[in-house]
Length: 334
Image (cartoon, rainbow, N blue to C red; front, side, top):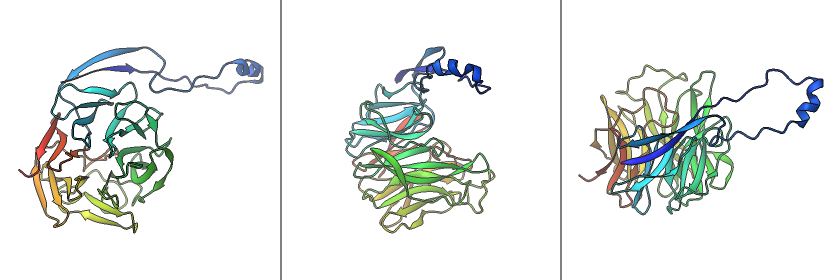
């Protein structure tokens, strides 16, 4: 069970229809400046809504490095709960939409996506939800889907680029946790096809990501998932080379390296099912371990990821993931 109270509010800013005339110049000058818009505290009426649920939709999650907690998002808020189950506790809530939490390697911080600054950007907060700080500061090319570098000093995210259509493409950008303009890591192949879900390898040399690999430069809704829509590509940060890494019928998405660097969990479509796989990185062997996932978004467009984030347990024996409204843990070996 998890319980929270969410504040809901709708407000629309007033826009001036005409520039002030010369007669109104003195009055305008004497009028105090309007306060900066605050996403968390919009003007207008609001009310509290009690939410007491045991299921959630499209929940991204992560397991703490000490293996004690799970952090997850639900309805735009972020919660933590014991890994063995129990009551969830909100650490980021309010009107702003917070999602996609990821623990830092030392477990002291959490990176997440939030629109509390006016649009989706990468943020970092302490493990208890305090001291939230904005990492990226984009107002148009918005960023989502954070992941930490192994040294805990940098955060990679997906930057969104729109084209002449409302659709767009993604690039991987790297930011220091203290902020700054960021560094471009990959270049979008087209102007309309999606790329995202970046994940660092355990040693930090590689970044895995999901990419719509279908032919042509125009996004098409009518695609066959039994062929290959998405592939997992790998960026070598030492050479700058990007290569296809997991390919084949059913596509491949949501790359998730194990803590020991020996395995890569990912998701593939097997006919009508989205299936959790594990690849042995030494041999390349791919093993399906669970076929009860919710349907992934390979046929459509996935600005926030093709499937919610999942996480290995620190001992490399289990994977924790969302499906069917619940948070599950599966033993990889069995």
